[in-house]
Image (cartoon, rainbow, N blue to C red; front, side, top):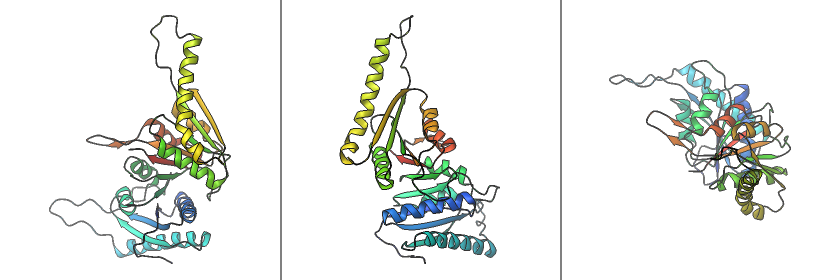
Length: 293
C-alpha cells in the first residue's frame, strides 16, 4: 500500500487526526494527488512535550505510537479505496503538529489540512494548525471547509480573490482548478474609496474614474491566464466593498476559493492578511491559499 522510497513525482501531503474533518481532508488530498499524478503522503503528528534544558525529551509510549500508526494506515487505505491507482505513504510525526506537517511537506506541490479537528489538548487541532500552516507554508495550502464529504465540482465556479499586482500564482491556480473541474472562474476584486479632500465628497466623475482604474487592474491581472486558458469561462467583478466580507459571501456555492497570501513575520508571531484569515475561518467552501512571496 505505501511507497516509502523517495520519488521524483510530485508530492501532496495531508494531515489527519482521525476526525470527520480529517477524513474530509484526506479525501480531498487523494483527489488532488490523483488529478496531478502525485504521491500522497498521509501524516499524523503525536504531540510530545517540549524538551526542558537538562532533561531528556519525553518519548510517546508504545500504545500511543501504535494508535497513531493505525490511524494513518486507515486513512491511507481510505484514500486507496477512492483512488486505487495512487501511491500512498503513511507517516507518523512527532512534536508540534504544525511543525511536523511542514517538515513532511518539504518539496510538496500541495499541503492539505482540515478546518477543524478532534479538539482537546492532546488532539491534532486542525483548526489552529491550519492557521499556523497558512502563515508559514512555502507551497499552496488547501484548507478543507464546507460540509461536502468528498471533493467534487459541486460548486458553480472557482472563486478567485484578486488583490492587484503580483497575484499571478493565485490566478494561475484558479484557472487550472477551473479547467480541471470544467467550471467557470469567478474573479472578485473588492476595493475601498481612497479618501477625498473635498468637503462635498467625491463627485460621480471621481467615483467613475476610480472604479474604472480598479476594473482595469482586475482585467490586467486576468489577461494572461485568459489567453492561456481560452476554454475557461470567466466572470470578473470589481466592487467597492469590504474585501474579506465580499470574498466570504461569494464563496457560498463555490467549489473552491483561491486566495493569494503574503506572509508577515514579527519577533513573536507569523501571520497572513485579514482577507486570507477571513477565508480560513469563514469561507463556505474549501480554500486554496497560494503563497505570493
